[in-house]
Length: 343
Image 1 (cartoon, rainbow, N blue to C red):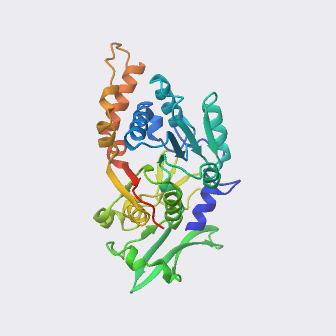
Image 2: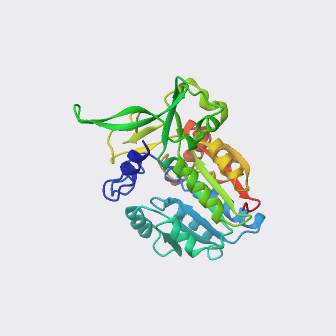
Image 3: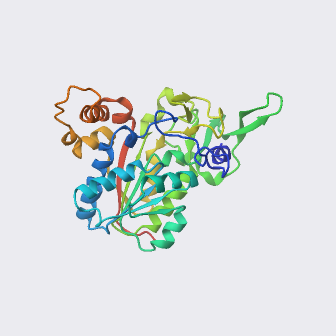
């Protein structure tokens, strides 16, 4: 599964994220919170500025996977309005050449630095002590799927059936005993299909090691913790595809033409953090987070009777962030900080 996702999403010529097809918005395959309203970016702009001040961080934000650049533009606009635009540096790491071009078009005139890889970022900032932000990034790392059958671990892999001319799933006995699957999934029902992204874990470990003490990390994504994973609805895991705003339960459909995603295992994220001296400061639903950070202060006293006026649109978006099951409770926000360096 891991290799299939790697090719389907990141192949230089045919991968979904690398292609020039539109992915976000009405004519794409899915919406992101920043595409719903600029309120999302404005709130985060205030959060970033406050976090830098409270934790005495270097004034730099690194956003991974910035996509179209809409979120970055919202943040920069808010800082400019508040008179702090020149006081904080904004840096982006974006792997896709197509999206880097979109970013350059969207952020023309802004003093934003764009890197094409994490390695490039590390070379430029060997002593980083700032803020890391990643919105819907963790769910985009290729994963592997396991299941315990008759006391043995098996991995769910993909093969090509020449008779049907289609990709299909097959279970093979897990050969790598170093995966420590019994320990990793100790609290999970082993008869379920269990997902783990070793690529995500390696990326987190690399990120935690590179950043300096006091650095703060914000991850926004959809996921589950603890016993939530043992619900019957997740017996076949959470992996799925998004194509033209419809869920495709078979992730093998439309390879290279649709997003393939899954719910993040927040327990795995927190366990990786603990091993690197990282403390989870806060974890909550996105709606709760936005409300706490001043969402309602962005409501307009819209005097216009036109329901399509900017004021009415913004108010509807704010209600969505509080009441929409996906925007409010489908996404979670986790805030972490590096308390010590682990050698």
